[in-house]
Length: 153
Image (cartoon, rainbow, N blue to C red):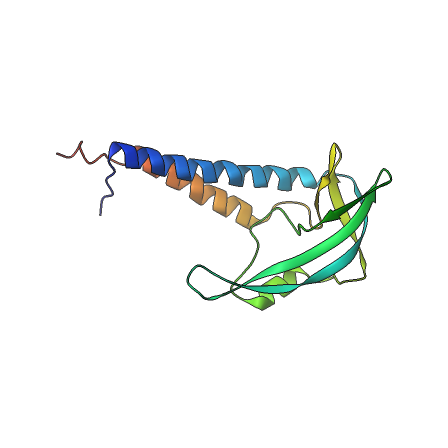
């Protein structure tokens, strides 16, 4: 099976996948950099698993977090668990991601030194950062080199 695109549809597909690839590359970049950020203790204000609906009406679970921390005398509030794909169709997977993180407890929060509002509880990338980036980059490349509808005529 060969996929063919018209000129405009090819450009739109390349643009869409290319944009998603850049966003994922940015997430990977922050994930890697976060391993080297300074940290302070944060008070966990809220931690749990939240049920949402996916695009097909099925259950999808995401971490629900809110924590507070101080850097240079200023108080910040964060919500990010990690710079990686989040959520799962299984609540137990998300609950495992939240192990050791409970409301009322203290936990390290890593923050960007020049922009302390940018923070994360679990620094570093996961294999999913690389898998998603590879898929998106591959899809962008395939869309860019796919034959056009007019070339086969």
